[in-house]
Amino acid sequence: MSVPHQRSHAEPALALHGLVKRFDTKVAVAGIDLEVPAGSFFGLLGPNGAGKTTTLSMAVGLLRPDAGQARILGADVWTDPVAAKARIGVLPDGVRLFDRLTGTELLAYHGLLRGMDAGEVDRRSNELMDVLELGTGNRTLVVDYSAGMKKKIGLACALLHAPRLLVLDEPFEAVDPVSAALIRDILHRYVTGGGTVVFSSHVMAVVERLCSHVAIMADGAIRVRGILAEVRGERSLEDVFVEVVGGRTATGSELAWL
Ligand SMILES: Nc1ncnc2c1ncn2[C@@H]1O[C@H](COP(=O)(O)OP(=O)(O)OP(=O)(O)O)[C@@H](O)[C@H]1O
Image (cartoon, rainbow, N blue to C red):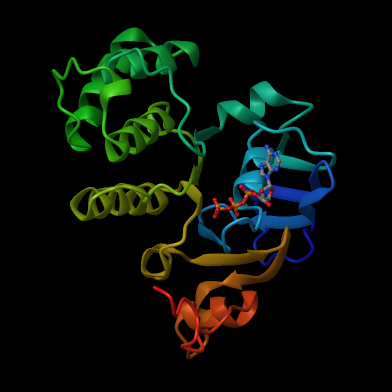
């Protein structure tokens, strides 16, 4: 089988074809085609409102597209949802969690829902709570966690069943520098071990450090995509980003009243 636009013959970890989403008259995502190669660390960039969250939500089956398809390691998210969802771990936007549970209870819920053995859920959940410094015996309800802790427990839920693809919406947002370094390390090891990560971020330094591939979105479309080194060339990723999405420059006369 030959796959056009791809050097590798492997099935892409994530393949989006013609994805469209409108909210009333607003076209949030305007027909996106994107392939994320298996084993890649893929950064999705774009200014506020570019359509990143909408795209990732459709990619993982949280939001039904108006048109188009999303396939996860070959399984269609909408026609074969059980197979598709078994292969992914998701950190959604805003991390909507059952927050009247403790972190350990939440992980148990996720693990059992995915049909995992209770003993294995226990072992992995203790290890995740420990590694992510959420406290193994912590009885605090998730609702009382800080924003960064909520991100970390959301990430733990996404990792628990050792999925082959991780789709993470702004995993570094609200996370302190020590925890960010820890998460970078965990994700790096996950990709080295054969996993694939797709994540959205506004933090260029993190994307430059971690990613093998990037795509830059603006106004619901992908403007630039490819291997990080090729997209960046001799410039910084931030320079490329600003050039691609455009941006206003301060003239010095704004907010003169301030
Ligand atoms: N549920 C919704 N109802 C109406 N409009 C929406 C909804 N969700 C998103 N939008 C609109 O779709 C566009 C894309 O939003 P989206 O959240 O996907 O952007 P984003 O790139 O993730 O932005 P950010 O970086 O700020 O998180 C925006 O104009 C937003 O206002």
